[in-house]
Length: 185
Figure: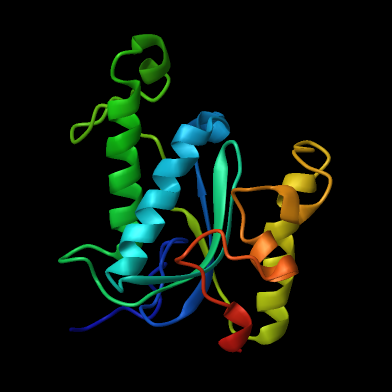
């Protein structure tokens, strides 16, 4: 296959087998993930993809309107990427969860030929973690996100449940899918 070396890669492009820092944002920055029941959908999807060997999750935080991950995709899920499967599964589940609430669901309505709703902004940001220094920088950023002044969700990173900070700071593994990224670099 003849590839154009000058073609722009999507921001969300991730090479299978490589470790990436990845950000996915709820469409129009709405706070859909404020409620724990929506966060649990994220956890369920990460757990399932991990159990199936499609991804390795090294670090994460689920914020009210976006998520940060350090992960590696290991294989395609049929014909689609693992992160594509993640986004699709969570979006379908969010839609089901909001199906009885037209006011809330309408916030995600789009005028597209292939879908009625869009829960995730298109073209998530993926940053290849090419060195231990960059990896540690992103790991620190993820874990400090809930403490940012505009969020102020907790006083200590390890107190925020929907994060891998407790695993790295206190060696407590609340999520079975987590692996230590420091062993990769």
